[in-house]
Image (cartoon, rainbow, N blue to C red; front, side):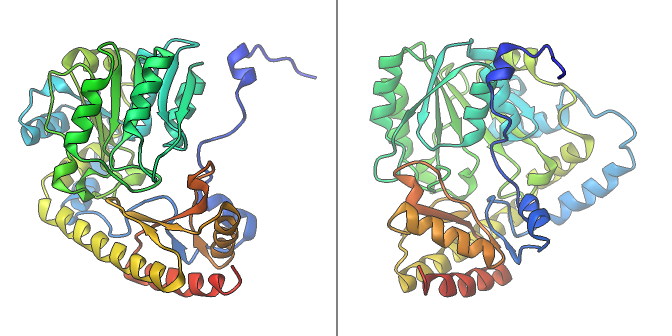
Amino acid sequence: MNQFPFTPLVQRLPATIPFIGPETFERKTGRVFKARVGANESAFGISSKARQAMIDAVDGVGWYNDPENYDLRSALAQLYNLPMDHISVGAGIDDLLGSVVRAFLEPGQVTVASLGSYLTYHYHVAGFDGVSYGVPYRDDRNDLEALVDAVRETGSHLVYVANPDNPTGTWHTAAKLQAFLDALPKDCMCVLDEAYFEFAPDDSILPMLPHDPRVIRMRTFSKAHGMAGARIGYAIAHPEIVTALDKVRLHFNVNRVAQMGALASLGDAVFIQSVVQAVADGRAEYDALGRELGLPTVPSATNFVAFDCGTADRAQGILDGLIAGGVFVRKPGVQPLDRLVRVTVGSLEERVVVAEVLREVCKSH
């Protein structure tokens, strides 16, 4: 038997990835999903400006991309009225999370997050030999007070919070987030994942705190901008934090086509607002469907809705039925969230399929 010189850490890690893609199910079953509404991708396409910019960029794909992401960082700085040295660009929030963990978490150190929160963060923590300490959700929301208590109990220097949240869709107001930050020990930094901020109420968005070393804000072009497959996002933080991320990030991580598409999409506010409105309409449809079927929905400020199935067993049965019926969805795996089934707001055609299949599944669940 071959003996490979793997590190002890790699030998301990499970051979897994945070998410199983719909393509995996399709390969196993030989059937294509009728509705792909499980990964919170956008069903509403990309800006026509972004599309043309990406088409044009293909002609230059033989060249390396700009490792400084200069044009995009410059546009983001102008948008947020910040100096450019406050912004770091990465291959989506997933990539940025890995850089943050690598830069700030030493082997054996503890990071705090809600139990059942975004899996990729914990994937990176494990991959760099850190320890994840999970705090249960309260009323399907991040329990901010309990997170602060856990930081103090563990001595953690890093806490992760998503607002609006994934996988529940819930949110806290900016005032509550500010109180949370103020309650953290001075040597603890908060990774604030704002992947869904475009869909959130105005009073849930913290003012920009560019010189506050406690906060690393992360945003993405994967949701409202519809560019999940292009893999591009950005972090807003203190310049010294951005410099630290530059020390460890892969500098050619965001390809030329993605850079040009994101830059063009950033300038198409009308398109983004149309997506936000379409998602709001879809959430309302899901809410009505949930009331019809006795599956109340959790209030959401994202591009997905979580249906409350009452118990974990029922949720698993409904999820299995939806997948068998050609609808790709996901559900959380830990209590108390494992009673939920999370469904992305799909296109009008996809929502029709979701409603038809869910009604049929609920007859036996």
